[in-house]
Length: 161
Picture (tube, one colour):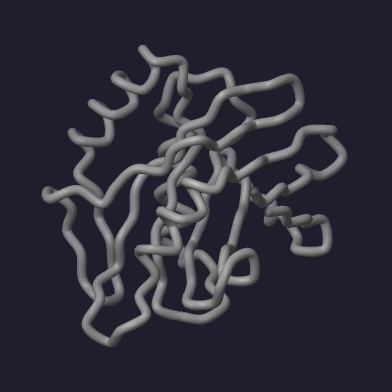
């Protein structure tokens, strides 16, 4: 598990082992690998946001070495199916072919638009950009609302087996 305290909120974003493994498997470690991405689903346990499932990529995605456009129909179907099982959509993930990744302007615009257009009770959505380095260093994690974003600093990070 990797835990990310969320500022002074008292909440902790927790990535479970299967989620970490899924994200690691899609790193662009070879020159020919295209960007990949998907969605993040969680359960809420008091102040702990337990990210239990990462999905994607899908056949209908448009993927190149330097870009990723998801299949929005597949995403919506996943949200409805997971919600019926008690899992809540909390954000998106995708890869970048760089060791220590950061979101691009299109990445931040896309997640902000998603927050603004979605029906939800969350303060924001999570964006994870997966780089080449091993986690947690190779993960950029940020929380986005419709107008701003906060990167969860590695200084507030703890990792456990």
